Image (tube, rainbow, N blue to C red):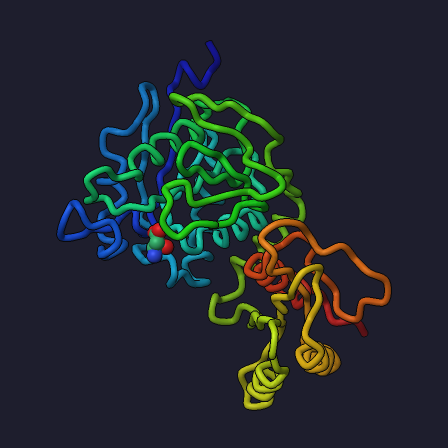
Length: 334
Ligand code: ASP
């Protein structure tokens, strides 16, 4: 018996809202509900496995389409404080599905935790005839407590019995209960009756660089985080959107970075590319990320705009924002 079994395991469940906390007027209504109504303490009631104590904290109560930097800052802060406590085994975060992959990527980038931080969600509201939230929470708690696999670590996502890593996961379906996928990488594993059947490695994390980023995330008021916008390239696209964004910089609302949601292997409509190069010339950090749901951008020689590899546009945006934050913290060269 290890020490943890002797003292029992302790998991913090942080609530942020989402469909999992949603209420509809009829149990037969799976889509006409109000998200973010049920408190996290109620969501976890009677779901703790034997020997696991659940502590709850409500950090936000919102529909995740409205997720913002203030909530991310609080999540980063609270997670890092809880994770530092030796008697806390892991964290579960209940979250809406719509921006879950963004929050997961953000948290992995700023925490690179050695303990499990497990985001979970639901596609049906808490009031549904057959809600999926309770099983997802139960699976997430099994993983976060170390019960499902004592080696669990990193920011993980649990939905419909599958465990995904923060870097690869994407919401891929609007309605199906198993709404997430990890593309080429595949899921990390499957939760089966509270146990993990792992099929690939845990997410790799660089703690030293995560700590540097976390320091900036904590120090910089969330309304002063870099402004990074996403512009999509498509048939008939025009560079006027980028020119307008750059003009807003001149008007005092500075554009710091730009992600081009590019086609295929990072290609961009020539009109968008010309405007992106003008923006880059003017000091805006520009990155290309592919809109393809699988694969990565393979670098080509003489590329004039750098690429985000396998990151999706929304994750490339977070990556660029964090890069700009740490860059601005560097002492000005003399
Ligand atoms: N709009 C909801 C949200 O993301 C959808 C969900 O939770 O699945 O919060």
